[in-house]
Image (cartoon, rainbow, N blue to C red):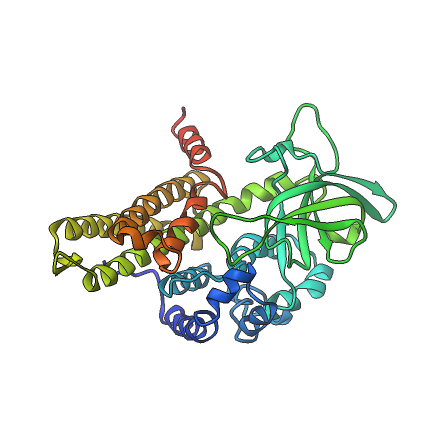
Length: 382
């Protein structure tokens, strides 16, 4: 169906992204999967092309164009090429907004140029062993000691944690017995700070090209100048950015589901069974027709949500709705497309297998499908 979400500027950026992905990402992607990450020099190449600094103000080396649709284009073009851009999505869509919204002038001068040119990689450390979606239950602490905060605790499932130069760590700086949400603070822990160590690199079922780490903090001295935003207000900050984080997951889900259909069409046209192309069977046609219809429904819902987000009007409940629908749709579509590959669909040499394993986490991270339903139910007065 015709989309009216993008302008000529977005389409020009799409051409840049497509060319970069075809030349710099696709040929090297199998090796990156084996290594478990995208090399740092590729981030710098993206930075040199202006792809990482679109939202960063011009005075710090960016383009000064905080338009979320450029991020959508990047995800769509990566999915079209049957790859992902490692932790770029997390850096641009999940982490950078914290810096843009809450960094003071001194911090902007210190960090923004490196974020724009790809020399500084980031991570955000929220999840802890045993806490899961209970953000208010965080136990990593920071105690004030003069001009420093002393940080102790552990984080897990941290995307990009092994490569990050700057890690936004959610810590508890005070306790309010009447309000568990009060007293959380964002601290930026920098690579090389004594007591900050990276533990196991976790072996995942999918998303092989981005690292996921355990992080440990033992008496880490973090300067007070590294507090992001106001002390004790982190819970509100996290809630402010969650709609975009959930929208980001939905963007990937729709784009990857669409790519799964394309891969299935190509395969079934070439693959023969009983002397005829698999694509000629009525079951194949019906399955792909149903999948295409589901993707178009998800795309329409998603595009509306993106437009609302660009206008600053996407609600938490609507972000939950779009994430719930699009990720569940992705699971159905990719599974049905894989089935059309038969036994070959189970082999990792075919991209459909990667699309299948990568898709599973979409219903978990940024809030599980069950959490999305809770949010939606609350919006209904239930």
